[in-house]
Image 1 (tube, one colour):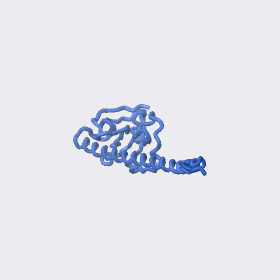
Image 2 (image 1 turned 45 degrees about the vertical axis):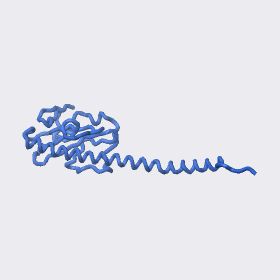
Image 3 (image 1 turned 60 degrees about the vertical axis):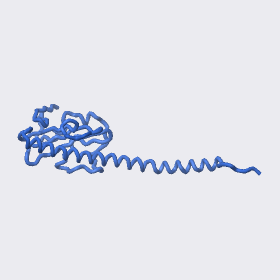
Image 4 (image 1 turned 90 degrees about the horizontal axis):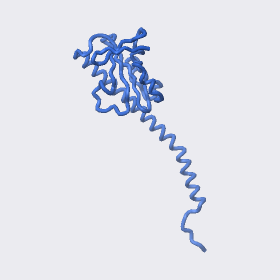
Length: 174
């Protein structure tokens, strides 16, 4: 009689089939968890950006860098005192036509998600399940000529005036 020292081919195939079934079930769940985590991180970054813009706008308004009513654009890579923006790009427009109640309009994107002309003052901070936080597909949408200024304008005209945080005029044309 011959002694058995290993597994048969049928036993090995059974183990491989069981592992394949586990992977088929587990991989979509893991990917969903990863995507949800990315979206939540993006939404948290929107909150961080808006908080930074609110502080910077108050500092600029009280320090005299900007004067009076208008639209003020804060680029997240150059105007805010953030240590690192990572893959995040965009800007926040402050609609200060009513200087006592400014509105904050976010235009932000990274490699995974984006918000386009999202008015935080009217809608509140976005949630991870908010349909206006959508997958990033086209960088040209995020880089339109200060779309938040155009969306914020109560009475759109061919040219809407926006200002940098230093008070310099930016003219947006269609």
